Picture (tube, rainbow over the protein chains, first blue to last red):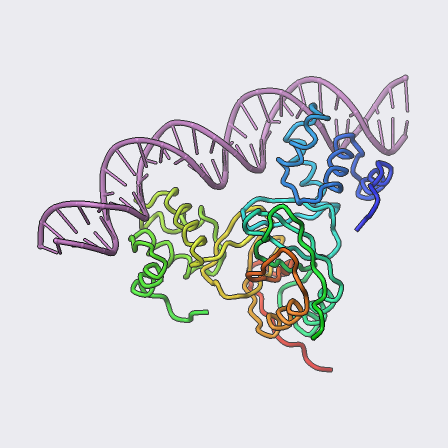
Length: 156
Length: 156
DNA sequence: AAAGTTATTTAGAAATATTCTAAATATGAT
DNA sequence: ATCATATTTAGAATATTTCTAAATAACTTT
């Protein structure tokens, strides 16, 4: 997870790596996705950037996010409410899904990733090649306006 | 996982348990979902039942599946292609997702469920109550027309 | 078994969401 | 600076989902 804001220069390099032209629209869209704590839909991205960038059309946002996802620059995130969302955070990580607020909250934990990976290593998948995996933990936030945190339990 | 076909009587009992009226539409829709090896969308369910039940409207299928899901009779399944699907199989289980065919394949493994559950037990979730979880394993089928199977790896 | 009460279904309209089109434009290469 | 080509645009076309009010059917009570 990148802690400082990503620069346009860095985005340009990412795009070049995939042979994608660095249009101003793509820079804005990618930057917005990086800054978003949410996992927004195409529509949400469009709404956020629209005031500052009224000339970027909705079709472009849809197409751009699709292109990004196809190139592995962003990740598509399935949501139980049926909407397709996007995540600039492409490393293997997990999600908490709040069935009330429909929020998708990142949850990173290397121990868990390793645990699952090791389990999968003991299995033989016939006719299927694994690319990655993610755990979706469903539940509900208690206070909808506060954030969710995860820590280790006190040992008894 | 139920091995024999579910009877209308059993569906009626399930519905009654949730205070839902046992309409013929609901019986057909629930039965269809049980029989489906896929994880169909509302549209797919409608298409399947339409020939034999031309009077069941699409709006009813949408509404019925929604009602079922809200009552825990079926489960909503998020899909990376952005479509909302349904699963009559409500016990905790995992999914393989083929990014090519968009198929969602059930994958049951108690060891894995326990592994994850035990991990979660060691964590303290602040402001979040866990209901359930599922692992989504992304990848690709090799032969699109054959099924996927999972077994233990040979020990070396 | 009939009547009453209420949830459910229906068809079609309305609202949303997504994709497509062909022309215009901007990017990166030469 | 020019060229070839990918990308964007607005709006139309599709597709998906929800809504509406009237009609119907299920369960309850008698």
